[in-house]
Length: 268
Image 1 (cartoon, rainbow, N blue to C red):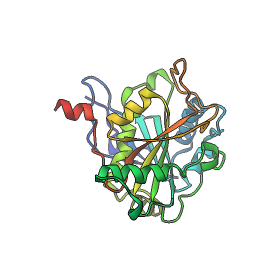
Image 2: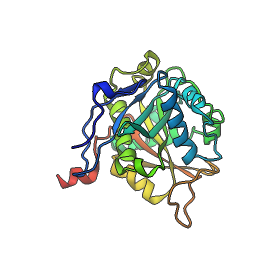
Image 3: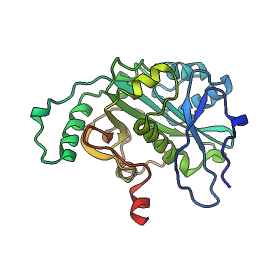
C-alpha cells in the first residue's frame, strides 16, 4: 500500500492535494501539495537543498530563508513528500502578457487558434535570470493571465528517488490549474482564477518534450536560446543543451488538457 500522509502527519505549511494518479503496484506514491509561507525551517532548508542540487550556479537559494522568500512571493509552489521528507518541487511564476486580437487569428480550428495564441504569449517570456529577478523571484503580476511552470526539480538523494516525484508533481500542477481549488493564500486564489494560459519553461530536448506531450501539453515551437545558462539536467546526453528552452503549452483559450497521460488513456 502506498504511504500517504495522514492528517496527523501533514507538514506545517503544506496543503495536501487529492487527485487521481495511477502508480505501479508496489511503488510508493509521493504526497503532493501547495507550499505556503508557514513551512518549517527544516522543510524550507530541505527544498532549498533540492534546488541547489539541480540548479548549481544558476540563482539557486543559498539557504532555507532564500527559498521561503520565493514561496512568500505569492506564486504557486507545489512540493512532493516521500515518506515524510521533501522530495521534489514545482516552481511557477505568473505574468500579465498581451494577447492576440481575435480578429488576427488565422487558424481554421479552435486548436490551431489556441496554438497561435500560445505562441504569441511565449514569445514575450524572457530568460530565467530576467523573469525571476536573478533568482529572487517576483510577485505575481496584477491580473496575471499566464502561469509559467518554471521547473520541476527532484531530490538527488537515493532514498528519495521515485519516478512519480516528477510526473506526479506535474499532475498536481495541472490539477490546481484546471480545477482551481479554493486553497492557499488569498493572493494565490486570485491568481489561479485569472489564468488563461499555462506554459512550461522546458529544455529543448526530445525526451523532455515527449514527457510533456504525453501529459497533454502541445509544442508551441517557440524556442529561447541560452535561457538557462549553467543549468544542468540529470543524465544529460551528448548533443543535448539544457540551457535552450522550448515552450510547451498546457492551457490556452480553446485548449484544455486532460488529467493523466495519453498512453494510459489510449491503453484504457
